[in-house]
Image: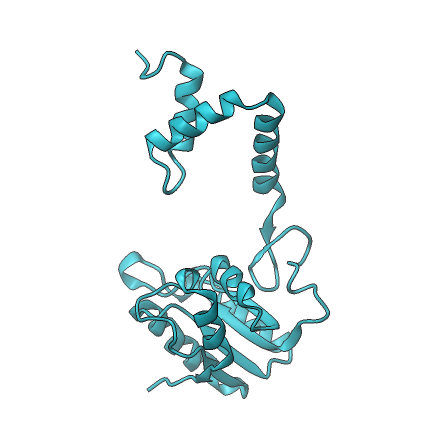
Length: 203
């Protein structure tokens, strides 16, 4: 016995409810909305999702999402290739880009060091970051990591690994509240934190 009068509707609700932040009531509301729309609208959504899943990959240079061989930021000749900003994930790239306060390149770690959850340096793209110093002239490395114990631990680890490379190592100013993720900071605060970055203190 299905919860709804239609197995197809229940299947759609079940799949939508798998998405983060979407409960069954919201999933049902979205499913019924799509039923009322023209078929072309639902097909366009389905095609967009399939193309998103099959067409997007991780940039081999910075690990950001990309449609082409390199992401739009790495392939932009107007970006400052001598400045590199290290972030936890692609959402942080989007947050910083919204501020229009930074014109360098990025490196996406894919997380932060968290021994409790079994995430060590080898689970992140730290080795790829270190390798970039062999192929790129990086004058400044900016840590834009979360203001958490895990973010600080990751910053300290990176500092120890990279301090011998001879580049300037800075961190975004603490305009971002302790414990906050970058994606939730307002654009003005995050923009000022980028512009007023300070030397990284590993003490």
